[in-house]
Image (cartoon, rainbow, N blue to C red; front, side):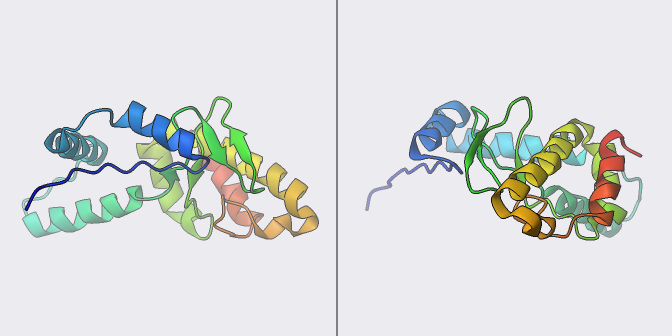
Length: 171
């Protein structure tokens, strides 16, 4: 039997952008190096919060929970900024990254305040995305847009979204 190598690239917008994403993000065939880079990226992200305990089980539970807070939202754009909007059209992220799986439902109580502290670099992008989604959904769905904010999460806007806006600076 022979070993066959394969790479897969994703794009929310086009096959051409999937190819561009692969060329930019994963140009080589160093599988072990890619695993090491992913491990380093997660170590760096989890090191943003230091938990002091002599109990290894408590540390494992804490860092597993912290990891779960970082799984979403996730970047949802190509390396050139193109993204699929809430209005089902292709857009260019002008000065911000697009994210998906950004729930606005009850996460403003804990997840978003934490995110504003440990990932302040993401807050401006997320607020632009919320505003962009409001515009796109209003133009796409008219008055029904009130039920479609937070990039396909289809959460309600209003009170929850207002709380997110106050978190863009960490408070």
